[in-house]
Image (tube, rainbow, N blue to C red; front, side):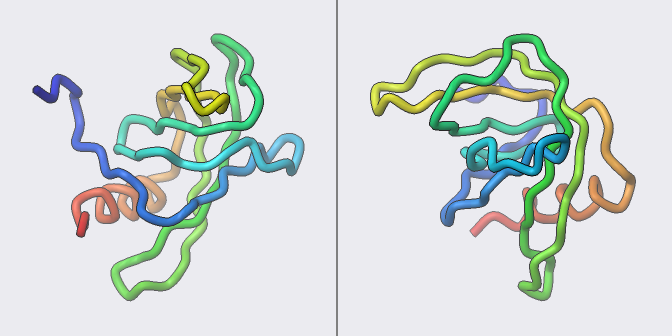
Length: 109
């Protein structure tokens, strides 16, 4: 049974997530909601840290659009694959990016 505040959309194709402070790929999106995201990374992220993240999703026309957001790491764990899963809460996002994200999440499938 789903107990989350907001609808989440799982990702079919890899969506790389960039740490905009370093310019490095931090990992890839596992799932997204208007409140946060689950990141799949190859190395651990800092616990309780703030991150500035960016990634691309497709708009309603199927064109890639950049989304930027400030996030707060909420939890992380080692997956059985040896990767690291981490949950982030969105704490800052432009209205345009939030609208695009909401439309993307609602357009699942």
